[in-house]
Length: 238
Ligand SMILES: [Mg+2]
Image 1 (cartoon, rainbow, N blue to C red):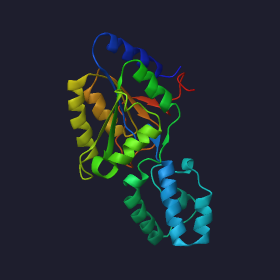
Image 2 (image 1 turned 30 degrees about the vertical axis):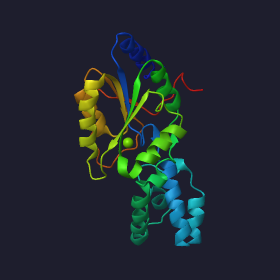
Image 3 (image 1 turned 180 degrees about the vertical axis):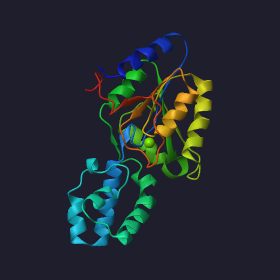
Image 4 (image 1 turned 90 degrees about the vertical axis):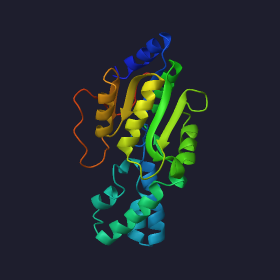
C-alpha cells in the first residue's frame, strides 16, 4: 500500500476536529516534472543553432530524458564542447524562469489524484514554490489551472517568492511560520532534501515526504525520518 494513503484519513480526522488541515506541495520536480520545460528550451536552442547533428539529437529526446540539468542529454551523447554548454545554459537560464515557460510542465504520476484526495478530505492544498511571483506568477496559476489542481475553489493556495533574488530556503521558512498560524500541517512534499529537513524541524508532528530523486547537486542528506516515495501513485489514480 502506498505510504501516502494514511495521509488522506489523517487530513479528514483533523478537518472533523475543527482545525484546518494543510498539505504543502512544492511544484518543480515534486508535483510536476520539469523535463518538458528543459526539452522545449533545448529544442528552441537547437533550432537557432543550426547544427543538423544537434537538431537530430534534440528531436529524439523526450521529457523523461532530462533530470536536474538541461545539459544531461548532451553530455550523455558526447556533446562536451564548453562553449556550447555555456551558450545552452545562457538560453536556459533566460527561459527556464520565465512566465512563457511556466505552464508547460507535466504532472508527476498520481499527483492529480492525490491532491484531489486530500482536498476532498478537507485539506487546504498549499503550493509552496521557489518560483517568483513577478516573473512566473501568471504562468504558474495557468499551470495549476490547466493541470486541474484545486486552486479557484477555495481548496488551494499558491505561495510564490516576492522576488527572484529571494532565497528559496528563507521563503519556505517564512511561509512555514505563516502556515503555522493558519492551520495544522498534515504533510509536506518536496524534492529538495534541505527543504524537507527544514519542514521536519518546523512541524515535527507532520509527515514530510521526499518525492523522486531529482535535486540540486550537493544537497544535504535527507533526515532518516523523511518518507521517501518515487511519485504519488496510489488508489486515487484514475
Ligand atoms: Mg522543487
